[in-house]
Image 1 (cartoon, rainbow, N blue to C red):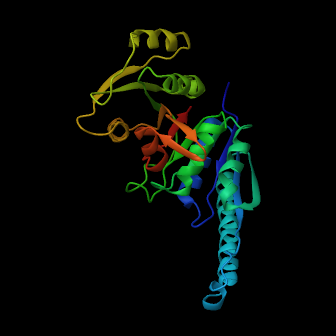
Image 2 (image 1 turned 135 degrees about the vertical axis):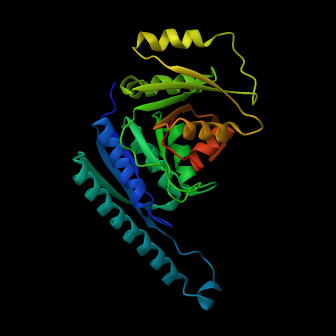
Image 3 (image 1 turned 135 degrees about the horizontal axis):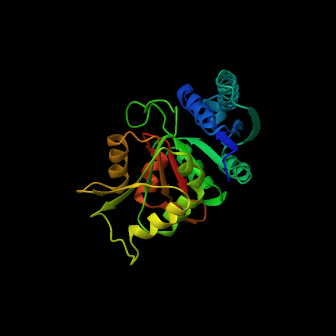
Length: 286
């Protein structure tokens, strides 16, 4: 199945997604020859109940100003999106919804369930964008691509032009296997596929070998270079990002680790890094 129906979630509060990441999302859709729908929100902000607050500060006025900020940011972001999509010739549409800030993550996950792939701009560690990404990854049943923001981890990687060079982070796990299955259309169209296994960071409990993976992908017409990268005291996330830079990857495919408990997510270290601080587009699947 090809990716034909993409969703882009755009942040509008407290700051809107950077023009660069919106344009990169359009370029990603163009590379896949897919239709792209932009989704953003006007926030409904409630006035906190405090008898003393209104006497000292104009709380109602502050809330109204922040609400208007989200409205202005949403409309400006959609203008940037429409201009970029028209310029690239990408079929597109947009959705602007009004909702309470605490319900945005679930609203995005609900929309994502009927899309082939959801593109989410990264924010930063502990940022609300990371929370939205986690919600979509673990509750939508569909894969996510995290797009780097220029503000995260230094300068943004070059704009997306092709998806020719793709690597798979492989550790013989269920999430990694799921990611390969979900990313198969991308792997088939890539010119170069690499498989990276990080060593000396955790125990890989399997009696299977890379020859099994070669057999499986080979039946789909996919050949790959296999690499091992010594963590050498680094986290898996940092090791993968350095590997991605070394080989000039266009996309990194990996499984997402974690489980939900109430409304919080406890994630594997690499998943946390990739949802908060990616330096290239990262395809995550659970």
